[in-house]
Length: 361
View 1 (cartoon, helix red, strand yellow):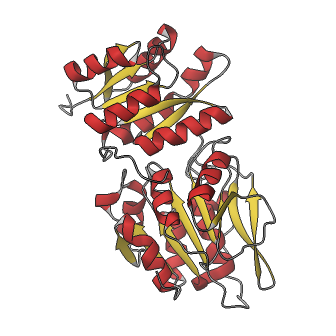
View 2 (cartoon, rainbow, N blue to C red; view 1 turned 90 degrees about the horizontal axis):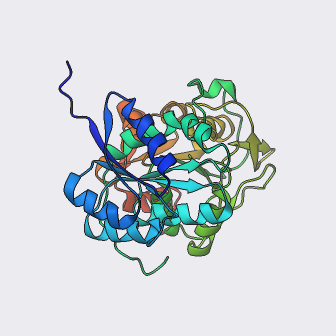
């Protein structure tokens, strides 16, 4: 019999049905169990003090105090790994991004219809994110002055065949960045430090449809560079960052010496669409050693293979270090594969990349 400690989860939701369904999902897993449930933040506060859970699942819309207000207080006073439940609406997307900013590790989307069937369908996603949250590094929140179904684990071959890099008829450079769990705040920290004369930047952040537009708009408001959700056929311009939409893989296309965005609705890769491996392979195929690859915090290993393809072409590659990651999975996979040129703390990555392209920072 295994003596490994099971992950203790507190479920906070005002719906008795949702509490029951989530508890059923969690208790069916051998490595986790529900130690308590709470109908609102006031009950949750007492349960956290009494039970000291490893992870809290938290709904946003609750009586007496909403989930965001409770999350902010929790992360200020007693930082705890939290997985949020979010609605698939524009307002829900904005709320979720605020929750991630406050310190939530990740989120799952609560179905708007067929609640029982929908919640059971997200079982694998929820339990994977609870496992990641249990080993995540959570930090005390300090206010800043500026503000699916489980798919087969396919490789990038399913979307884009591996080819020799095209001849690049210019000295243009692009930067490609991949991130997952903890990545929304990590990307904000990197992109806020990028100057307007930087090369084009393409970003794949694991995020479902409906959330990436709000995420890109938020970054655009706080960064020097222009940030947008990518659509197909956008010219890659200096001082611009292009965020992969939650419904499609982001690739790089070339027409002569000019670079453009391209989207693909190909199958999920490493169980993700968009996938980092697809973006990195595309950059390797079109820009070769003129591409710079950056991999940030995230669960799993998406991006390691694509970073290997960049590294094999003598492209410069950077990975976030363990101490500054929320979840070390993706950077660790690339580092363990020996395909990373430089390992650095999050706060240093923008400066390292700008130094590499010859821009003062």
